[in-house]
Image 1 (tube, rainbow, N blue to C red):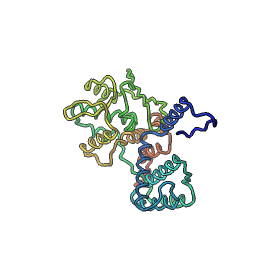
Image 2 (spheres, rainbow, N blue to C red):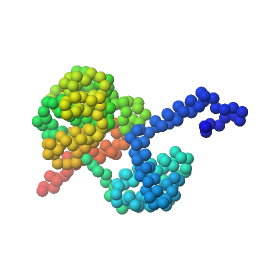
Image 3 (cartoon, rainbow, N blue to C red):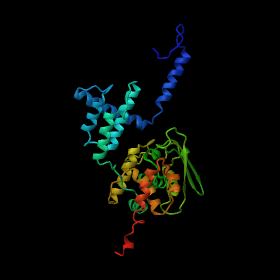
Image 4 (cartoon, rainbow, N blue to C red):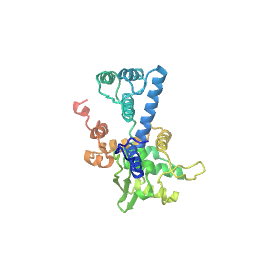
Length: 318
């Protein structure tokens, strides 16, 4: 009935059992929903593959892991293979089976894959300010277009992730003459939900993220609940929207503007970092908005934005 160890002549009290259940529920919140979903999908893929091959998935032998990784080396990126290994290890730990991802047999194969595979991850095109202007040029005044305009401007100006955009509530916005403060309640870099606040200043231009956000909220008559919502073909507002919708909106705007490149929801966040670097904004100020924990990831965007600024071709008298 329970794994709790109590005195031989005592059964666990209802209060103790209730606390054990509460502890289990708290532990289940240790990882974000997206991480749990990815782990579940990875484990399902691995266990089904093992079943098809007549191999034991739990506990799995190191040789099984190396064969699995080798079998999928041409199908998946190195990032995906690394995550699959983490998911398999997590499943073993949850089942109280020892699993060492750095055991010699597994480590040698993973290191070999890293050396032989192309490890460069997909890098979407950054939606910098000139490109964003082209994407929004000529957009109409329908409610859906007003939402899309506000969403992309706010997403770029705040270096927001897709999940952060769709999770914004009206109560998370604090408007002032200077601009708007955004409370990001949960994010990838804030796993424990302590909350992060960023400020977006008014620019008093046609592309001002703050004034466009206010105009959208007025037109949609949204005073509470989710800021950005799905809109049906009749112009009716729904209660919310998915983060995948953000990617589709960005792709749609860039496609209609015939912009060359590979665009996604992440193009807004990448556009902020790249454009800020091009404009000479120092790393510390960029990081205060992007909220990067890993500065090397941020520096990749900064290097991209500074490539031509640092080019010495003209100095070669060519």
